[in-house]
Length: 151
Image (tube, rainbow, N blue to C red; front, top):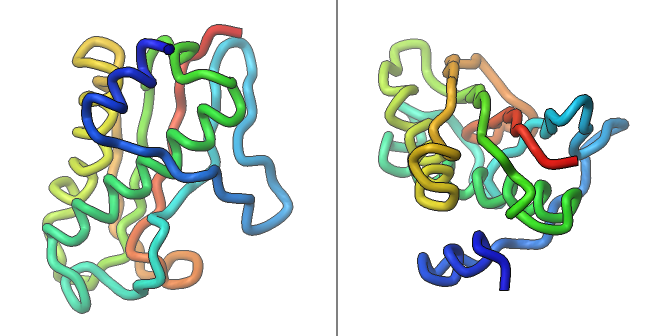
């Protein structure tokens, strides 16, 4: 068993099947050892905005769920999460009301998952989080990510 698969098992995490792109784009592209993963939202039928329909705590869970979607894509493309050298950059687009102020706490759901799965050194990353007036299909959030990988 691979190291990261064993860690996922220890954490009680089962990754979903990777989702298909919602348009004319690739789930991920690898260039010079960097894997650019297309924006992924949580696998949920729930739609709406943080600060209106959803709380920060629900947003945290949505971000963690989107992280599982991202990991499923990475595993599908690479064949093994052990080929990830580092989580490099994360950008979150939070579908939120104009007065919502806890975007960073929502994105912690994704960040905490990456650190849990890859460890502090490999999982810690740079990140940006933005409030969005709307996102695709009125998902609560979409997360864009970049990984350094073994080619």
